[in-house]
Length: 331
Image (cartoon, rainbow, N blue to C red):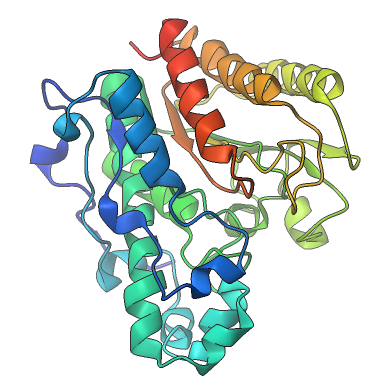
């Protein structure tokens, strides 16, 4: 990892009166002449959640924070020069995005329509981390690219925003952040951050995932300090019981200064990639359990959206955020 200092967040981006610590930009949307529809990922998920929250919470357009695009200099803090150069080849980008037709598209268009929105989303994760320390919580309506590590992308994840966030917190907030916990509840194993923080005593990884789907990364799995490998079609009762147990066990072993919560909704019943059977009510209870557990202890929580491939996903996320607010967990 490149140890040079990087200014991640401008001072004026810190706490602003009248704003909620929710991060979103119109630049999050992946737009590529319809090719994005060839992957089940909902490229407009953040937009739909933003609209629902503004409507149902009576929020003005300027109530959320907006990130600036990550620069190459900032990306180099985690990513190798060779990896970033590899993104100049359309074939490599197509492999990461899992859309084979992208291999035949000029690379400059892939950067504009796919990689640039992902850089904005990754920047949103970093900004959300800063805001969480100031507010006690923050939500990025994007990000959670947990399959990407320093030298390799995959699973629609071209940039390692979780790793970038962790390095940023350790470097820029040494008095407030010495220990970080990742709670990865996406249906897929978070092999990207697991590869980046293998053997780091200051980073604790809790990962609950379907063991029978991508990526099945056995080397990365060695970094998980509290994990559950779920069966296909796991339902609410088993899922929430295992989560509750893991949260208590993890806190008994490790007391973090901040939690990065990768809140994938590909656990929902009917998701074409997650293959679990969690209901919308189960997802809402999952999110409530994570937030209530850590906020009761005064531990800041950064929530990233990660995967979710059903049309219902955006609505469930919006409902869950509203539910957290109604329970007093988003003060």
